[in-house]
Length: 123
Image (cartoon, rainbow, N blue to C red; front, side, top):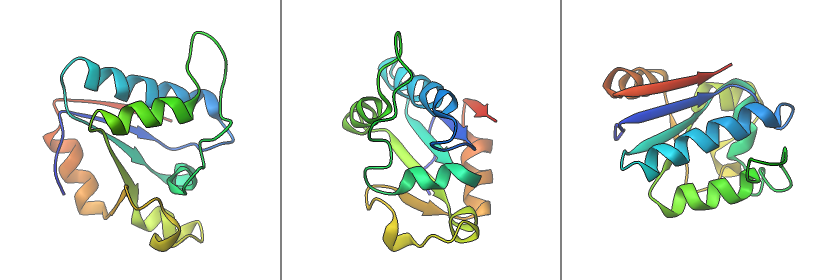
């Protein structure tokens, strides 16, 4: 598990696009300021790990659609980590997740958070 300067953790998925949008916006801005960043998908947010899951998720101005934020975030080197236990609990498998994202364990989550210079928990 590679650690990063900034970790943004989101617990909600498509049912709360406001929280997802804020998470992706802040993580992208961390990259734009020259920091490394990881978005951590926990609980219901693991659904966002499926390919195309952010398509159509847009809350309106001044925020960009989540799919656009994700594309820019990944292009700039941002990482997405998926809580493996949360994934299994939600009836999903690693094979269903976007191959660009990393499925991680609880010890990995602790490692990420303890080594980050800053974090955002969106609950």
